[in-house]
Amino acid sequence: MRWIRTVLREIWGLFVDDGSFALSVVVWVLLAVVVVRRVAPEANWAGPALFAGLAVILAVSALRYARRR
Image 1 (cartoon, rainbow, N blue to C red):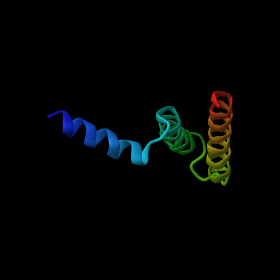
Image 2: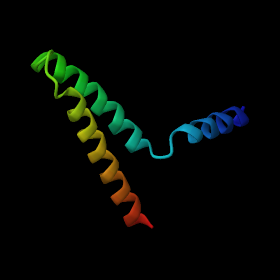
Image 3: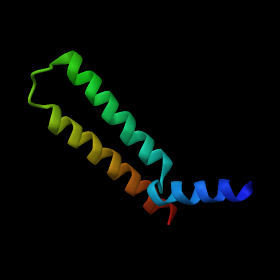
């Protein structure tokens, strides 16, 4: 039964390299959807706000990774 856990861990590793990065992206997308729908459903800033948040998350993740190396 240990081999099942190993296989699942390897499959997870194929798609998720940094768990905190993946979690923060999912949280940002969900937060952006909820906030945009509540604050201004007809606003044109939803796309740029989503992009800016994802860019910040990517930059922070890259800086954190660079410090580890």
